[in-house]
Length: 285
Image (cartoon, one colour):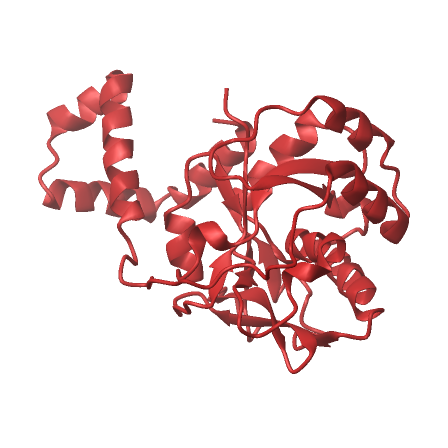
């Protein structure tokens, strides 16, 4: 476990929360001997964690429905070199290192549809929210954006999920330059699931893509959103607090309505068969 993640766990499990967790385990039947075995036996500790993760994956199982919605027929993933060139020009970034990396890409992980170019948001602005605003301004130049979250992209309203933050940090460690090359899928894999159900069913190497990443993918692939009767895209890598009160119970998404691309937020528990969460998948091995 890396240092930042360890500190996060320690902060969560400090004080009364640690005691409450132990008491809950004791009520469920945990004994002193079980605690001793878990402390001294890595296999036992892993078995307990695996059981907990299996429970988590079954959470919100009723928050999904069958869906036959798919991508528009005219949508196709562009060559990665073309994506890098487009984003370099739009954001004024240096795509040299991304182009060099793209010459020898790892095998596409299972579940990913293709490789997508996504700038490091830190290369675009000092804060995540400001980077999202700059991305939206570029989309708006086409005259087709309806932004329902204008003025609500500060850190009290919008943040990346911890998992997404952690996974992007790994990509940043492995790749140099302003633009990252990431295996991803544009929503089909998780169609018909609520935001939080999609998050619970991610594979171990999978993470939600937020508004900045999805918006950049739409900048290079505007054909992905062009009509109402299609699969729209949820940004499950972000969390949104509608009232800026610390209750991050929503997440952003994009859809197409009345001839315009709409950007707004929806409740994390709501199921809609016409939406699917976009996700990135780290190469394994």
